[in-house]
Amino acid sequence: MKPQNTFRFEYSYLNLPEKFFSFEYPEVFIKPEIVKINDKLCRDIGIAPENLLRIIDEIKSGNNDKKFFSQAYAGHQFGHFTMLGDGRAIILGEHILENGNRVDIQLKGSGRTAYSRNGDGKATLKAMLREYLISEAMYNFGISTSRSLAVFKTGENVYREQVNDGAVLLRLMKSHIRIGTFEYAANFCTKNVLKELSYYTIKRLYPELINEDNPILSLLRKFIQIQVNLVADWMRVGFIHGVMNTDNVALSGETFDYGPCAFMNYYNTSTVYSSIDHFGRYAYGNQPRIIKWNLARFAETLLPILHDDENIAIQLAQNEINEFDNLWESVYYEKMLKKIGFEAASPDLYFLIDDILKLMQKNYLDFTNTFFMLSDENAREIISNKNDELKEWVRIWENIITNKVGIDNAITVMQKNNPVLIPRNHIVEKALNEALTGNLELFENLLKKTLKPYYYEVETDDFMNPPDFDFETRYQTFCGT
Image (cartoon, rainbow, N blue to C red; front, side, top):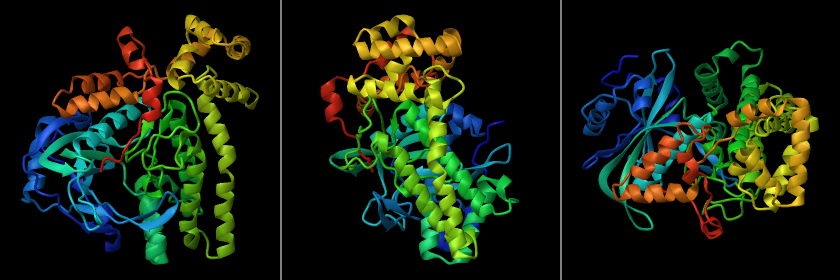
């Protein structure tokens, strides 16, 4: 695709009733300064990276007729329903790709909107660089995610626990429609408006469903499948989203809103880093249960349009939610068994995953490194020599692998499914803190390493080491908003 001088914007979302959005305009930035541009992604979507700052200048100048807007939505935050909306984000438009698909281009941290409530609508440089780094790592893991086009400083201070450099993230997603959008429609709009939102979502994201006998039911079924696959992907790399509110669950199936997220080091199902998750609602091991709960909230919003008979509608929705547990078991174990060398999942192998995870938690083993070490004979010896229980698990696993698929084939599968490295929390923090002083060397190096997360090289060793126990027990993540 030949790079263009500007975005090719359309605004199909604005065909929905005005209750779903508010026209907004980014605040005038005092002295915008590009900190990081995703050159490859810019070119992939047909934008010349060198033109990005000029485009930002045009956006902030007010000298255009674009229809920038923020979205209205509601949501369950930590289980409690509330009215929300884009309090610090503005969609600049739907950029049309060469293949005809559209992606939202959004400014995050660009100032107050109609939904900001008591917030200033701004964001810190550290938080925006963090989202850039983690979202790009997730993309390179092969996990569906929003993407980061650029981070730039706004030239003004943002006040949180301390004075911070203000910054804005330029973000790309297939769509920012979320469960919370449907909760908003179901609670504050008419049945016809809810139906209009539903069919807009189907046509935009899943047009293959439009001719189904019951497209709304098909949307529910499709969305359940997509979210199961997404969260199972999180689990396989030890990712903890940290704030799985319904307003942070996208109908497109993309991971987004990387606030208090983190990657687990030492395996423990109760691991939680978020400073606002006081009771571990969104801990690593709770993520399957929470996504099921969120999907049930989505199903409830669709009841008025699933069927004219309320009882039938309830039964149709319940039938789909009832399929969650079996679907989760199948998808989760399929992904996890690949981490120990089995391309094809079978229920008689599930115990291998259950047992190794129990032993990892009992022995305080690193999640990422343990699976990586299993693919190397010498490293497996290190695991076996820790204690008799681990030695016995390795012996049983090696025997089954040898008889079922062969060790060489197993290693090939494992190397495709076990990241060599993750963005380690202590390294991420160091990289971000150095970036705040203007030194992006470690940030760029870590970003470069995540380009090939399944490929080992000697230079990767320093990025593979987990933090010490003291850091791990004290570490907290914050929304940064």
